[in-house]
Image (cartoon, rainbow, N blue to C red):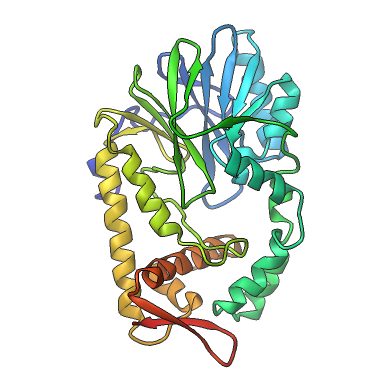
Length: 346
């Protein structure tokens, strides 16, 4: 456990649910854990008792292993009751990937924010300009010139629809401050920005439980990236502003994150995340004493070898920190004769 983690309290220690099994973490709230074929090798999903049925929160990616895990849950963990609805925190493949399959399997509606529903529909359809074909020129403009890596990234242009082959054709809208009755409890919607277009977290005051999605994670910092579809974005600022929306929740809140283990210490973790971004921004400012592209900043922020999957997020995050400083007037931005955008202290 790293020093920052030691400041948090893991409510269930090292206990995790076996794939296809549930673990109760609060009255009527159950933890599921399913695998991912990435360095981040798992996602936490949630089952909420909902009267004579269940609400699922998040879906996993669309692959055979995740479908098999869900079938085990359906057989062994639903107490003979149906799934009544599927709620999705945001549009990333590990969260929305199997949404259409689950909704069809149970004839259940999907609940999601408009921003993330629209983005998921768009990306799963591989529309020109928003699919992976736009990624290469975007990263090349920001200094990625390694031919071998560019070739690997070229092979990922259909990455999203392979993990999210379909999204339900209709949905129920979730929006900020909305109260949703699930079983015996009311859950308040808290939207957040920077990581996804309109990320949804769910807070139940009666249980003092927060389903945080990817907005507050215990071990790692939430990815905040500038991607080709929104090349002038300022996601670091959006994310930091969104963290402030959790400050009114009790310190004793049990946080149920999408990755890592359930923990208490929400306010401590928010302070850690703010400090983390302050440190990264300071490193970037120091590096920009000379002109730096986003590709130049990647090894400043990520001091380890990166595969193609990790590099896409590292490039996006490096650019996000450069953009925050550019929007704040700390850096200026110029395009060189080689077509590469570089940033320099103003």
